[in-house]
Image 1 (cartoon, helix red, strand yellow):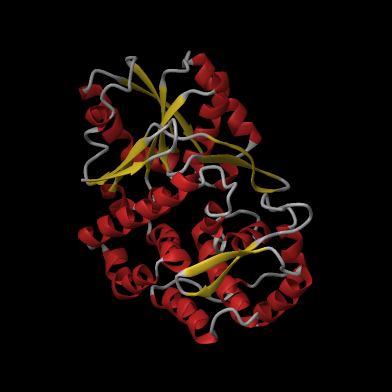
Image 2: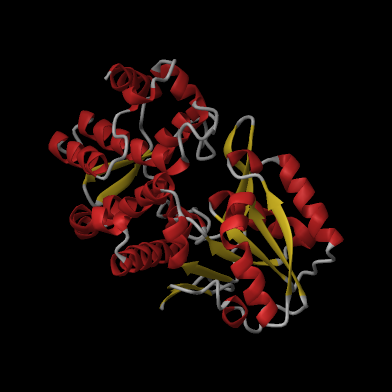
Length: 368
């Protein structure tokens, strides 16, 4: 088992990465579960695959799992589900010192974390991420949120978990499409600050996705360690460092919004396409070479992911996508900063981007 410390001032915690962590859940959570009844929030698909394992593990530790089971998908990150979840936790008499378990991917982690953040002005929660994307990104760092009609993740809070248990066994039951979507966030850590890790992805990404256990543990542990370093330095994204983790997200969220935050485009797929667009836009501005930008697109294509937005068949133009960007939570005094690239492994925050230029660029990309 790999153990990665996240040294947040006043709220440090561990990310444990290994196989069989859910089966030993009560042991892993020793000292944190104060009551017999333990609230677990999940979705129907995850409950079907892993609910029995969690229930048995808690039972063996002298606990009883009580379940809130949500529909899978982004639609569950809503005001309605947040309110219903908070009411359920109150009915379960959850106290500030109790731990709520979030068993699922990014949607469940975000919703549960936000509910925990506002319940009685803050109770504790434990992340049990069941997707590759959640294991390497969304379960670590304390960003919690819901979506609104205005855009993605616009209402939320910073609220750190007490513990993250990334059980690699869950990846064996993850649909291939979800696994590849999570891989986008793995590649991101190489692109934004570690060219050697991007080279590792080029050499090993396909085998990791195919099921190599050692490669999966390395990919998750390396990604978590990279995020932990950034979060330690800039927990609430006030210094600009943590903003680099948004590489690909400004473009990607616009594509998600255009597709209605639906299964038509998964979050990780949007991020992958967004990173390709960020690289090509960087090359268009003379910041990096066109060859480097195409190298990124080629790698995603080689592992079976979309690398061209023209393939999405979007019925819109570049200006429509830019309109979605205007709702981005990173807007500052009417300006939208973009994470761009000087090279593979060197990202920076650009605050001088003309959105009209972005719209023209997107028109060309949409045309293919």
